[in-house]
Length: 116
Image 1: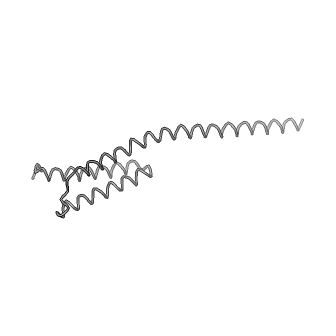
Image 2: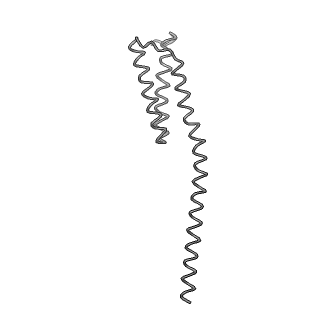
Image 3: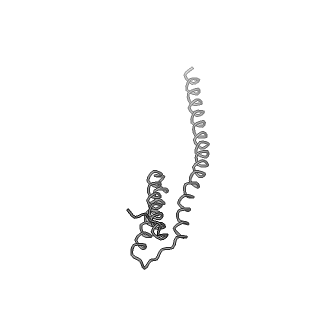
């Protein structure tokens, strides 16, 4: 009688361990597939901002424009680091700061900056 109980407990524990090990790998596979599609869309935002900066003309001899470009590059680097660590709020904040500096630069260059 004791042998039957022990065999039943061992079989039950084995079945539970097998079920949980296979479900974890299946869930891991599904979450990895979802994460990669989300990751691609998030890095696309950074790449789009980098393209905008590359297309913008900066006169590096002018100190103000040189500093603007340095600050934009700094915030883009921060956004890449935040994105790698999945700190999306901070990444979005860094991208917003870079975008604000870039739009300020464009307004200054086009002479449509509103003076108060």
